[in-house]
Image 1: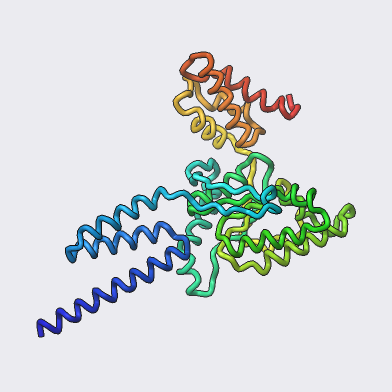
Image 2: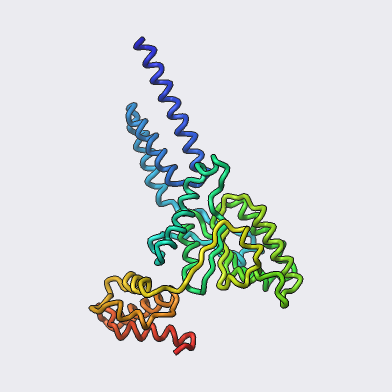
Length: 332
């Protein structure tokens, strides 16, 4: 009886290891590094328990090294090289300054991706076709970087204005090449300045070629069933064709920061350079600026402070730099 019990325990142990190996492979193909590392460490623990301490340590070392392995960036063919910018973002969600509901929307996208297999068991799919809409400098591009950074995916930015300008007459063919990449190489693909092709087809100034390009994009995104994220960013959502909206899984709107967010942006950006004054007294001078403009104003103030051999940014200097941002737009 004792011998039989030992055999049963041995078989269970072997089955558990087999399941772990299957899960490990699945995690690799799903690009889920967090789950991959967890399972690998579980296997290391199993090996340590049966006396294979050297193997266990080697597995742990490999996991530690893997945490710092750079993301593999795809090399493009020459005809797409100047149309797509590849990067490996290290941006994380805590760097995004926005209202609570905004963070919840981004976090939901990340959670659905990390647990997409659980969702698929019920015939559902994670959000991965996202439309970002808002004025320039409000965080759309940074959001794409956050999604890529949090999920350890490469970010590929498609420059739509260059695509249209350089290849007018063959844009649809170039779009097909880009969507072929999306299907073959997992990543976050950002279609920047999406207004270039997404304008409403019924507009009087629309030309036949642009109508064909938009129709091609609608078809490509409709048929896409890849593992990649497709993110389109627009500064003016009112220009977009209504047919686009049902092709996206989620639409996130961006607004210029309110008083509370302005204070958060200034405090976070100035950090140790913050002087002895309340950020509340600065808000009025930043009202109407975008996240990016306020960040640049703070950076300019910090640089001036450093060059002046001072330790903190004065209130007057920060106000001056904020005013300079308005002057850049001719608004003062």
